Length: 579
Image (cartoon, rainbow, N blue to C red):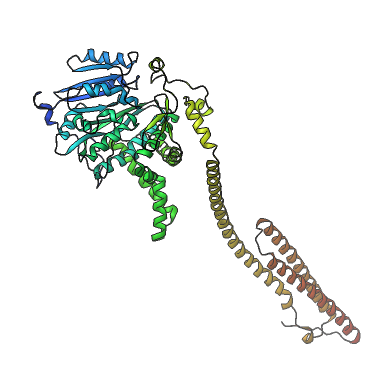
């Protein structure tokens, strides 16, 4: 990774425009002039890419700082990693503190409380074990801290190096929706919004409100510490640096449980932000915006929703490329991971806000309304917790089929919580009604499309039937036009009468053939379209049959008249008939 990665260099926005890394002026000053920094890194187990993460602390380009590594137990495998780095960088002021002190329920506070109290310098830099920063980050952060009115400096957390589907989902969350929300809130300065992956503040400021030990009863100590400093009247500032979080091989269930845990914690620490959280997601915001545009400007709901999804995706893609510093090569894979995270956001939020327990460090805690927590079960013994590492989590007594498919282990307390939650009558009713509504809407859409196609086919068939009826009427009119009415008909000779009778017989045969053909046509079309108006077709057939029968009776009457006239006359005359 380059020492000076351009942060948001490709991101253009009317709200946020952050320049590339500026130079750090404090790095070139003498050691006795610059303010000192105590960098505290609490450790537990071996995280993904842990050696490189910790090595970034030794490589900081700053003249005066110390590194304090905090480990709860001497048997922790992180101890060997720290000792190797201390041998590799002997010129860096670094030390390892083993042992925790119980000041509350938060294991992270218990682990680093001794480091907090023994730090040499007033400026503290708390950094998690699974992140790394650029070498010039400390100099730029201290330069921000020295500005008037600044009480806390923090860095935007971003995900890197995903190696599984769960890590890809976490990457989509951190580098898209979370980054947008995080940058916007801190740009406006409306409230405190700090994730404690990498943050600097003064110990003297925190001691005014009781020190770090006061926050041992909370789970989200990073946000509450930042809120206390913000309420003192100090500003929060961000540098152009990023806190790179190595994701590694996170399982899909781990991702969902992690997101659910922090949503439940925010429910009691920042309730107002939790209420509006569904509306900063793509689906929630899109549904509200589409309804509003349809109500105010009669914009088609689905058209605007499709436009909204495309724009949202392009913004997230630009944000991701700006944070990663490179273009997305596998756009299809990015789209699939992005779509899965967006579709799972609202169901995951609903599940999270419905519960009040979280799993943290192999323990289950119950969240209380005052944002504090209490353990659901007694904590494990020191020997048992020392033998448990982050790389080898303890297996529950039973495992679900989902855990086997996902190749992960879900704590038994989480399994019991999930079973009890989905067995509630309210949850079952909600899921059933949701499925019923989805089925109803889909059925309406399918039937509407089907009816539209049938109407188009009916229109085409009616046009064809009108043409056929006109042809039938013309054929049926031929017979009456070949002879005059009976009152005005002249006497015919025997020979002419026979020929006229034969002609009328032919016309009668034509009528019967037309009647048969029309009947077959009507039957064929009625079998293909059930909605045809069969009455018109049957009326045309009856009219044709009556005309044909009338022509036959007229022919018989003419034959009788011709025979009677030939017997009474002595000489036959030939008549000429002009029509």
